[in-house]
Every structure is written in structure tokens, then in C-alpha cells.
Image (cartoon, rainbow, N blue to C red; front, side):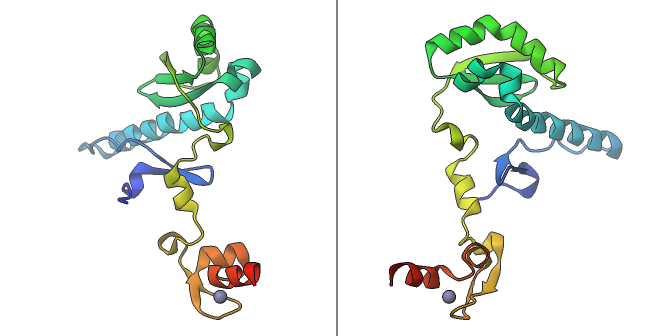
Amino acid sequence: MALAPKNQRKRFGKGELLQEAPLQPVSDISSCLNKLKKSWERNGSLAGIWENWSELAGSQLSKNCQPISLRRGILTIGASHPQWRQALQYNRSQLLATIKAAGHEIRELKIQQHHPGHKKEKGESEKNIWDKHPSRVDIHGMATCNICKRPSPAGEIALWDKCSFCRRKELFE
Ligand SMILES: [Zn+2]
């Protein structure tokens, strides 16, 4: 699997969030940095909206609708049930005002049908799970297993104090 360049990945909770590529550099370095900073802030605010979603949307809406993406000031909110999409439409201007008042740079709310997976898996894609996998040597590096003394993925040692081989032995023998 090809990984996005580092500047297109962003820490998000324990995983990573893909974000759009930074804008093309321009000759004026400070304006370039400003643009980059703006793009970070813009991307960062979806995380901020996610974090405060129950306060921004209220307990009922937040349980049934969720922010999906934020691009160029347009926040897309998904709801799986038509009734909740209707509720969102009805509350759209109020919700937009609330999110703006909370300091997020949003111009527009878009509402779309969305079938979330399990609610706890918000932002947890397969890629995220693999990124966090303890056996990923390319991310966590290598360490020495405390039991068999063989070089093993550091993520495994950190998690279990032993390599996955020794852990399996311990669990099943
Ligand atoms: Zn071992």
C-alpha cells in the first residue's frame, strides 16, 4: 500500500488523517507559510468539530448525524435516516451559526445520506488500524524480545513485553 507523503498525513487521535496536499509554494515565503497555516487550520477544524460535535449539534442531532468532511469552508454532514436528514435541513441555519460562533470557518453546510459504521469507529479506517498495528516494523521499529531475545517489532514488545511468537506460545500452550 502506498503511503501518502508525510505532509499529507496528519495525526488524528491515535491514527492519521489524510489531508489535501499543501498549496503550491509561491515566491514569497511568508505568504506561502500563511497559506500552509491556513490549510492546516482548515483541515484541523474538522477534528475540532468532531471533538465538540455533541455540543455543536445538540445531543439528539449529534447522535444521528455526523460531520464527514470539511473542504473550502463547506462542511458536509451525513445522516443515515431520512428523518434526521430532514431535521438537519430544518436546523441547518442554526447549526451553521453555532459552528461559526464556535470559531470554525464554515461558509456552508451540506447534508447528505451517510451510513456510518459502528459509532465508535469514527475516523477508524482500515488503514488507520493497520497503521497502529503493533507488528508494523516500519512504524514502530525493532526491539529485542524479553523472552526469546530475538529481534522483534518494538510495537509488540511495547504492547505485550514479548514478541508475538512468545505471546502466542504463552496464550496457547
Ligand atoms: Zn519472543
